[in-house]
Image (cartoon, rainbow, N blue to C red; front, side, top):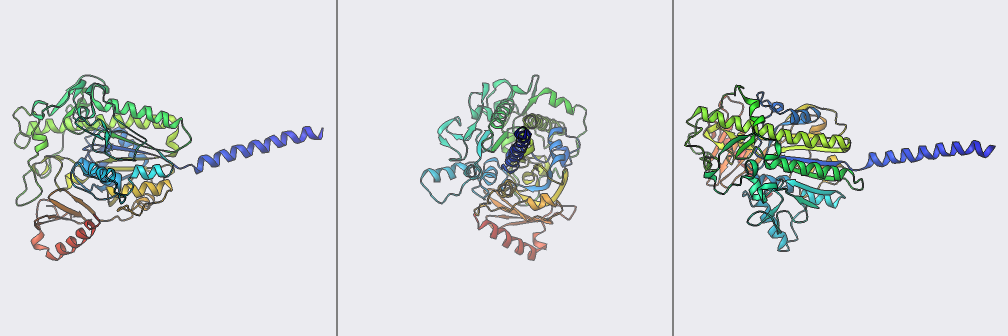
Length: 478
């Protein structure tokens, strides 16, 4: 009789031990990371002040996380910007930046530091990329970007995937339009279009479907935390979307283009060559206001289309239950001029090319929906993710962790630098200085109404000297 009384008590204690022990394992498991990269996305989102934009899914993420309203990329082009994201270091200014790094690794250079995915892999993570995460969607080189002997980021990904569907190869999908259209010559491809159909008539539909498949597979495997990076191509040129997204902007009033005039004097202005090469039916948005508005509506439609893909991915994350232990980062790889300074594109060192959205959410964060107005830069993302995941921050990272800002959004940030092939720039809380390779200087006061339309370098020589010193000190890391 005594044994019968003891046994139930023993089983109760044993069950309690098993349950609490399991809970401890779940709590101490490293958090997953979901990194969503959106190509050519300026802060044209409702959560970043663009009230006319329909971006409900990204805005919902913003309400759960912290929005970095003054995040600046380190280069205004896809390849070098993604280099800084994925390595945590400044690098070459060309789109081949990561391939140049890969060549050094393949030549046996032992001094190349671990990339972000490689660092997380070394700390027990399963690392997977889907879509355009590095410069080439799928992370391979060769004529059609599908040569598995030419890897853009050696040792980085357990899987680097690029579903191409009817676009034949990654190069075709990168600049593809509806239903398998591949860009052969820019001048023969429409700069924008709208087509009836579902999301799968464009390459991002296939990317999103694969990302969802990978999420489901990863969350069924509880052995390792995952680092999943997903790269959405739109709103990259050409601006094509299913018609239902364009229809959202029917009758919607667009805001005026700020500072639409070509700047006077020497600047990093350019002729919008990437945009102007496309088929434009003889129209120029700098001289045709109606056409300019058509371009802007199609860009907005592409933002809404990209937003829908983000929504599907986040919905899947929640459905799996992994959202409770996943850090989510949404990052735009650079800005995009929509007529400001008479530019249609990126590549300049004006604010419009360098200002991009950054949203970070992690479980149990306290300041959900907060705006952080601190100046931060893309190289900060690598150390931030390490800090949030509870793994060592590499000494080779140039950035600083943003965890303190996430915990106290009013915390101040730091100056941000950027560069292209012709010049470099530093952005402070009050000014932007741009230093050309021939020594010419631009200085703009963001505290003035003129902002980046009036060069005051000659009037502020002491400030120029101070900012040049800061900029050069930062660039010396390179």
